Length: 253
Image (cartoon, rainbow, N blue to C red):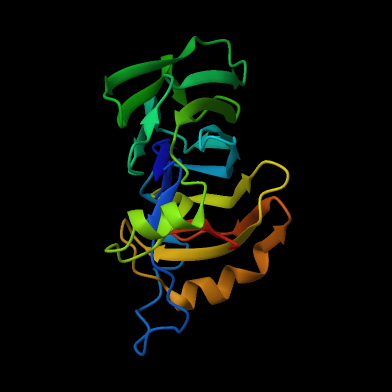
């Protein structure tokens, strides 16, 4: 599993961080948890919003991945300033590592220096921040930026490997996820496997940073999931703060 990054907006991951691993419950729980707080005054407390967040993972034949994470339309409320946007990456797949430091691929030209700084890094975790010299303010145009990071062996590539590695896990699949911690209008996740892999992808929603499935929220957003012969895509409108949206997959025999 891996989790890739967050702006003070969203945390994302594959587990199982850039991908995440867990167990598929085919039937919804008997009791449905209370829905999240709807958009409204709570979102105003953050001082900013983003129009879109996206995360695209390309898997190679050795289980390595290239992850592209991006945010569009970050706007601050008048009277609010921001010096940095923190992010976090992590890997939870057995034997998986962060292969390269995250790098800032592109960003909006605001006439200010914008850079990515590594705060703390191990083989499986990385805390970083996108820093804005002179601060991002409510008077600035909206900010877009994109980050790229490479992982090694974060996706188990056979059914036998998955079953053996997650025999005692609560959620028994690798997955690619995004934790919504700040207000965004839309979220787009995509996982792409090499040609020729017999893989079937699914969408899902966990409650917070857990592997507890939320049937009610998934019912609201499930039409945004589409499957293809190389993986799948999950487009979520108005993702709710406090949920982890994800794509997971299984291999044929």
